[in-house]
Image (cartoon, helix red, strand yellow):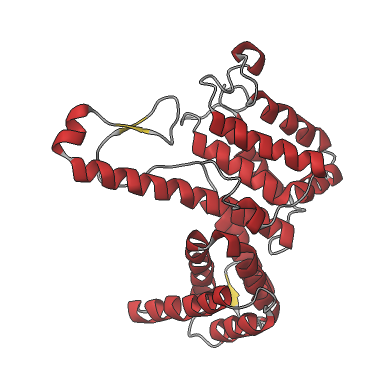
Length: 300
């Protein structure tokens, strides 16, 4: 059964309206918006499409209001608990349909920085794939294209950060199951890519990027306690200990001692690595979306 474009647009508008009202309301109000969302999805002509749309709209609202991410995830998770068995998709029925769709969407979207944005101008930096280089003639002859590309590039970096925060907070809040091999593997891969500036952990066809490092910092901070418990339970506690050591290398200014992790002595890398180490010094703890996106501590 197919859904036409008008129905999809209406679904996005209806779901967006639920989330927007929730953002403007009280963070303690979960049940009302959750029931409204559950009823909307269960009563739709194709619940599987509406489930996925609700995840994508959640992300778009979180892009605009990142500190509200936890509230939106709680609403989505509570809505999944209300799904009748008639709500189904290729992943499962009832609440499993919603939870597993979120699980696989996060794995798909929380990948390495891509930078696949228009217009077609500039070249990715060879030392930092999330930076872009322009020539003098680019700026002189195609000023609008250059500025548009930078703006789109910035949005692409933010998109990755918010998806990683969503993955972290989903694990912490129980919206997605962390105690399975797939979830742990996804988190481990993202963190390894972010830490692997020197190319010693895993070889890749794409060079390291600062966006991947910042995303790894957000991922760990948003679910550090949950990650430690999950890896400890799986007999992989040494992995978490190694993370602390690896993030410490990004703070060191001695290039030989840091093994090439912070070759340009970048304060942005130091600052975000320090936030990870502060987290572990406190527990570790699972930082809320308000803590992750606290503007007083963010240095992009």
